[in-house]
Length: 301
Ligand SMILES: [Zn+2]
Image (cartoon, rainbow, N blue to C red):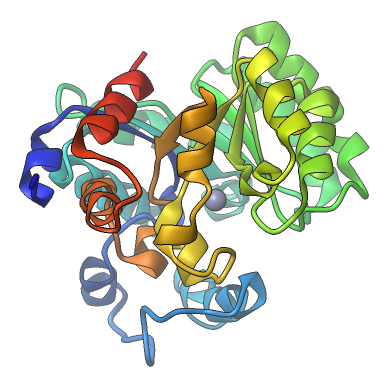
């Protein structure tokens, strides 16, 4: 049976990786200078995760150098896992740590990209939090998209439809500029919400989308639209969105012919690399080794 090393050696993508939380805990703890009690641990949902973020990780990030360090640590762990394409999400909130200066922020992202050239194809993704202040979003998002530094855009936060109209102009702008459109939906929300988000933002890819598993009509709708789901199995288990890997709907999506990728989400919290999850999924009997290699190869297309 293929062990983790076999998957590390195989070229692959991580298309759902929040770079502020994308590094191993051991690497993070020695940088941060503190330990997080009883961590990493299984959690009861996003609220518990955000408690830890609020108490520990968010407060530790102060300067532009801190931001740069976080991006670098996450990219280095991706390289160690043999990730060849990293669609890494850079949160727009980081502009605040760059003196609220988008040119300084862009220069930082470009510098990090350049640092790892030849080692990994790092494709910066602009991450938009739904609860981020509207005034800053309206000032920064369009020029950031126009900079061409970002290859994709992603929306996250509470999976509710309330307030999504504020983000529509950003997604329309991304579409015009040829920037890939993604959003988080269907992690805890249902199939209808997944379809609504895809339609509303004209999404090309969905971060999670597992809530669509029980609705064959929405699965067919996603097939017709050629939607790719960037799925994070271990994150879903650790946040109790699914009871276990064995019960994960990723296999159902794959069997239906949908494009899926296997991603980390937040390595700091969930502690399984893409390669480790590939091995876990084979061991759990969800996929054969051949199917995993097929998923990895398709993810690069
Ligand atoms: Zn995510």
